[in-house]
Image 1: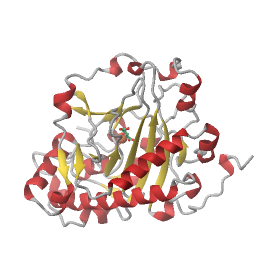
Image 2: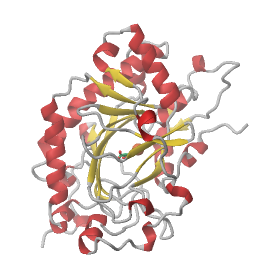
Image 3: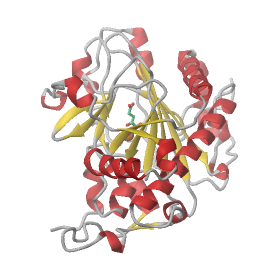
Image 4: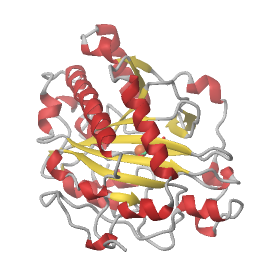
Length: 362
Ligand SMILES: O=C(O)CCC(=O)C(=O)O
Ligand SMILES: [Fe+2]
């Protein structure tokens, strides 16, 4: 026997810690042992399971943006970016310059990791005092309805925040290559977002003090009754922006748009980008951190790779003065980012409930 997870040596001594989750069963293992049984703790009410209507027309309306044009300062594309962040909070990004091979290698390595026997994966299990590793997040009470997923959670940048003992053997170089390529994409997007907000190109990046980058690889096992469970509860991301890679042939991500759940149909090699809470606050609500969720398939497992980009703990986040005017009075108080993030993690994922702490009551 090796060390148990709680006794592992921590390399990232200066790494911040995050709010741990209560221990819950491994979902992949539940399904392996008894594919037809769904424990009570996962079953949702009918109201929560609103069926998606008119899938095709809405899904194809989600904006598709071209990073090469955005980065060249193409006026039309920048104005499309503004509309996408305002009206959708989500878009798909093509021409991002990330080699297909880097994306494919990440997908293959993740699939291999989740295929390992539980005993092997458990070498990287989250501990009872932090969030990094293989396990779950946002589970805070024994009453709460659980989501149908297992995940690998890692802080990848800045490097001194890494806890390498949770990076699976044989997966490290792949995670490194993927994370550094997508960091470049995120920085380019932050540059263009600064411009469309009427600021210098480097403003948003600078405001992070340190661009922190968290990776969450979600594994959603199939479920014999997919209309009774959710892969991920509705939530908005606490990030500034999130970049998500989906699989080409398995869908599951749905976003709120005009009071309906709209599926985000995968476009091969595209990245899904969404505005997070920090952008919503900085823009004083002009850009929306939109609620989204993951639904489950009956026969196919699904893996998604989310990279969250967010500020250092000591950054105070508040609406920019120039985004406040008579039409758009100040909507948010100042929040200390580290506190904001941790309060969100100490509750279950529940739509936009965690953003209320920042809202000015009217
Ligand atoms: O699996 C997905 O498509 C969504 C993942 C997500 O929203 C998250 O990890 O925050
Ligand atoms: Fe999310």
